[in-house]
Image 1: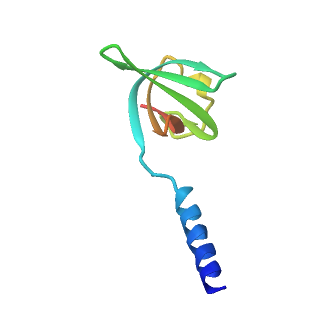
Image 2: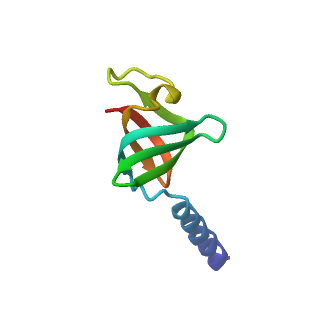
Length: 95
């Protein structure tokens, strides 16, 4: 019985750490060239022919220069800073 309880405890601890996020945030700065509202995809032109493709989530915050919340579509064509984790945008802020 002791071995069974110890096994259950080990499995529970291993499962909890398996779901932990890595916490690595990536910041991309450039011009927001497109936003597709249907697929929630953003394309940021980083310059030198490089682009970053990121997906917006329900928790993604879009803010203007003044810090007020705005729609992502309003940032198309503007210089932005996108903070993401695993290609999922946490925030999009006008630079």
